[in-house]
Structure formats: structure tokens, C-alpha cells
Amino acid sequence: MTTGQDRAAQPETGPQDEERLPTIAEQMADQLGGWRGLVESSIPVVVFVLANIIGELRPAVIASVSVAVLIAGVRLAQRRPVRHAVNGLFGVGVGAAIAWRTGNERDFYLPGILYGIGYGVALLISAAIRQPLVGWIWSVLVAKGRSEWRSDPKLVRTFTQLTVLWGVVWLAKVGVQAGLYLAHQDTALGVARLALGYPPYALLLLITVWTVRRVTRESSPAPLPSA
Image 1 (cartoon, rainbow, N blue to C red):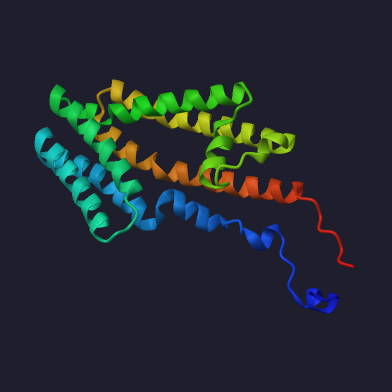
Image 2: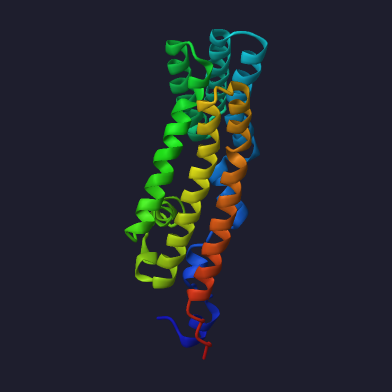
């Protein structure tokens, strides 16, 4: 039988002790794959751009796909997470297949442009119908499937505003790439693909994590004083 003195000696556990919310740095590192993930996902595109400037289209396609496969293989052999490498390999592979088939180097970037347009439109539509996509992505990636934010009007409003921000930025950056694509500015398109890839994404992710954590802290009830 536990006495009152024994209970007093036992540390009290609360929600914060049971489940610690990852720090901003930890959440960003997970989504970006760390600095190594950032570099590895950019290398195949860099290889394509440089190889295409120096040589011809098909050698550039072969080189970029080979590098993407090599990166994925190294990660697999090291038993490291391969999510980012596989995503990068898929994106490079689809673009490379289209460019190989059409013989037009700018088509290497076409899947990314179309994906960006679709993603940006989907973000804005989800915000318009009050089902902000950023909120649902947060539920899956950060909140382990929980969606309590749906019952908090302040968080719903926050996620809606963040979703609009993501949609506008996404359509703006893909609009620049689409303009270069239509203007047949192949080299500039490759540079834009790199410059408008992870930097805006990292900034949006930082804003999102910081904002949601701040609003969550403000919405949390103050702890009751212990007797």
C-alpha cells in the first residue's frame, strides 16, 4: 500500500514529460534530411546542369541518374534513411525519361514545374475550404496522426494562413521556372531550379514550425499550482 509520503516522493509526470515536442532544429532537420540530405538531393540536378553545359543532353541525363542511384545505394548500404534519396531519385528519373524521349533538355525540369503548380493550387484550395493542407501535414509528420488542432479555432486560423503563405510562395517560384521554360532559357532554368528549391522551402518550414509552436504555447492552459 502506498503511503502519502511515498506518493510525494514519486515524481509527477505530465503530458510534457510523457511526450516531448521536438525542437525547431530537430523538426527542420527531419524534414530537410539534415545538411547531408540537402546536399545529396541537389547533386543530381547540379550534375545535369554542368554536364549539359559541357556536353550533350543524353550524357547529362545518364550522369545525373547514375549519381542519384549511387547516392541512394550508399545510403542504403550505410543503413541510413533513404526517403529523401528515393524521392530525389524518382524526381530525377521522371525528368530524365521525358528529356531523353523528347531530346529537349528543358523537359528535364517539366515534372517539377507541373508538380509545383499542382501543389500550390492544392494548398490554396485546401485553405479556401478550411481544411488547410499544412495542418494535416503537421498532424502526420509532427503530431503523430493527432488532429486536435481542428478543435482549436486559433490553430485552424494559423494553419490556414500558413497554407496560403506556402501556396503563394510555391506558385511564385514555380512561375519563375515556368517562364524560363517557355522562354527556352535552359541553363537559367537549371540555376533557378537549385536557387528556388530548398532555400524557400527551408524558410517556409522555419516560419511554420516557429509559428505553430508559439501559438500552441499560447493556447496551452497554465499549469495548476501544486498543493
